[in-house]
Image (tube, rainbow, N blue to C red):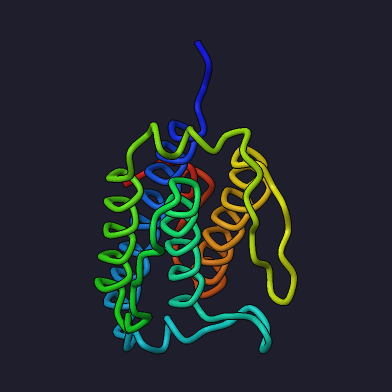
Length: 168
């Protein structure tokens, strides 16, 4: 059996954003347990020039949703960056998972060996659909999910590797 680009994209999205939802739920419970305004927990950064938790989640979600659209030659979905609570961030993850799962597998898989033009800042890089999935979509998904994990853990949320790996 050949593992397809669509299968990897959809399963990785479900697992990583599913686990991210669990991390966010634990962050929300933690803020309530210590009687802290969740805005304070959400505003933390690992370093001043890095994004806070909401932006990390938004980028993880956008990466897979826009990646699915680009792979399937569809218009880019638009998710306004308005989330200010844990519940809204969890809902953002749900929207991204639903969008990725709604994209036709055949359309995604049709670009596996096709060279796509991927905009990256001021340059455009040629990548096959397979390269784009492996070298950009999954890399960014995992980076931003790991940053969200680190931001919560840094503040004392009791989460571990299993929480990062297993969907809630």
